[in-house]
Amino acid sequence: IKEKNYLIALNNSLSKINQNQLETLAKNSIIKEKIKKKELIKYYDLEKASSITENLIIDLSKKLNFRNQEELNKYLLNFNLDIDEIKEKLKIETLWNQLIYDRFIDQVSIDEKKLRDYLKTEIEYSSNQLYEYHLSEILFELNANETPEQKYNLIIANIEEAGFKNASNIYSISESSKFGGEIGWINKTQLSKSIIKEIEKIKVGKLTRAIQVGNNFMILKINDKRKINKKINFDEELKKLIIFEKNKQLNQLSLIYFNKIKQNIFINEL
Image 1 (cartoon, rainbow, N blue to C red):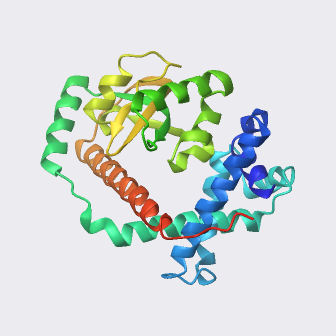
Image 2: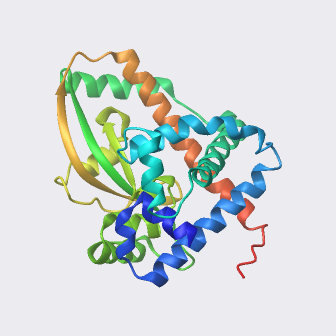
Image 3: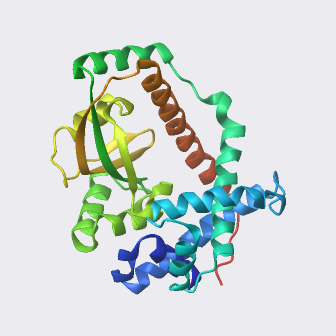
């Protein structure tokens, strides 16, 4: 019940989906959190890590469009949630990201020359006009004997029935799923050519086809787009692009690592 309330607090539209579906979603969310926590206690003292949560609460308040923690506290009370419970959840996610960084950063490979050449082409083409897209995502994986087309059609049917945000909560394996898949504003220069090719085919409010990302697939929705006229700092944009590419690779490694440890853990669901 607590987990269902937590998920609805992050994405209010979940209150409208089938209750059995919501219960399954909440159960899977709890299992995922418990698996991460079980792995984290091998490397961290979770009690001593409590100091990291304050900035996380500030970030969560902003993401949910609250001006301060007091407003967030009042909002959470509507769902019978306590701020300390939320801090614990945010702490687990943050430490998980730190663990992934510490274990796999040496495996991240960035071709800076390739990124520099790509960025130079894009900036020259745009003539100091910066294009940005406000995006939401559904990053999905395939089950045994499932084709990308089958899974894509299943997700699209769910989007048509329950909306993109709810479909993201149900099918997406990305951490953005808790917020209905919302990524936010992304510079065109931070996106790969394959993604740009797909989003330039569609209008605001529409969806891309399934785009392969590593071993998984992604559906993107364009919520909005805008063109900003400003003097572009090449080095600054390159730095953003490198960080974006690094995070993308770390996210892929995080999914692989999680699925690996999940296979060796038994969760009693009773």
